Image (cartoon, rainbow, N blue to C red; front, side, top):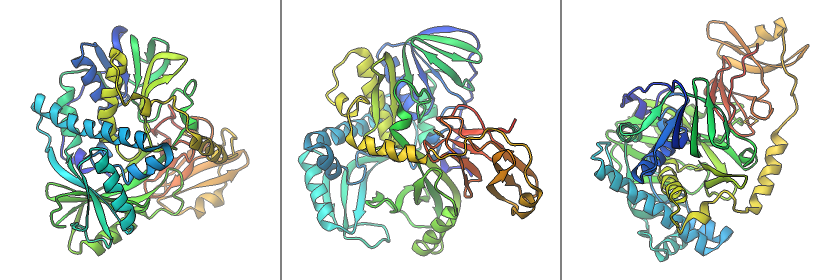
Length: 477
Ligand code: FES
């Protein structure tokens, strides 16, 4: 399954690191946040190196819907209620500045990436909530209004519209911006110390270390594993579905998302927590909705995305932990990875350059959140038992009962095992203990992967690591 972005953009390949080097800043992770942070630091005169485990943009950046917007749901009301109006205002203004920075960078660097200014909309059945959101956002200085004029075939009371938002092709943008940066691909980081990071092919020493790896893989200090979980959602690219000017999302967790890319409508939905997808069928349910809403449309691509969720809906951008003053982090972007990436790049640039940024405190990972406590309790509850390592013999009857193309957890004499039978009857068995912090993995029938319900690590059916925070696979050897 390949996203419309991967299908329509070849990325230049870069060499792995070979040998040791010293630089002022090293960034771990070559997704949108890592590349933008490198760009902002270099532009401020800080020599920066990016280390990417695979290829740049090959993680969540290639799976985004690529909306550039400060409108993260009905966020003004939500944050005003949880944290007060001042924090809500700072949150949306910081994001609006990040939206506008994209246009500046694209113009300054003459990047051709299908960038298009447009309006974004949040639709809902609750007219009062929409009107309150529009009024509050406008009072904060955002270009926001309530409207009942919407283009999507979904019954609702109307929408909040933010003008001066945008959309683009994320990989075309990333590839162009990356041309001027020092990047090593196929260079997974194995460990980090105060001012050095280790890889299999060399060590990088640096004054500053920035973790831009989607989910931070150093557990202590920081304890990000106890402060975030991950969610999956699904996207279809549809041809012959008409043309949509705005970008749309509903205010409910099961609402659909809509945006146009060229001739294609991108329809998103079916969100669920990673590791909680026992029955599968998410692509099929989304296809049913597509057939209902856009009869006559034709699917040209389908893919899924994974997002890091924080308890207070605000990303963690800033110092990694008090014990590591020269480590920085950008994570927890919710469903808004593009705008949050630019915001991270600007905030981290200012922190490292010693420039006072008026929005830094809102996003500081050190902020206290009472909500986080209940999240931690929920996450601990998901750290289920079944920590028996290794198994050897899968009972014959289990193998024969398993349908081709299906996976399951089975009991063996030596404990629990993960088993997958391919369409041509080949059996793969894996260790179902997550190598991150030991939760039991769950089978994901939609993607044919093993997913962790605790913090969202994912593995293919052969046991290869797909997504961290785990740093290794689950091969049964
Ligand atoms: Fe943390 Fe699996 S991702 S235990």
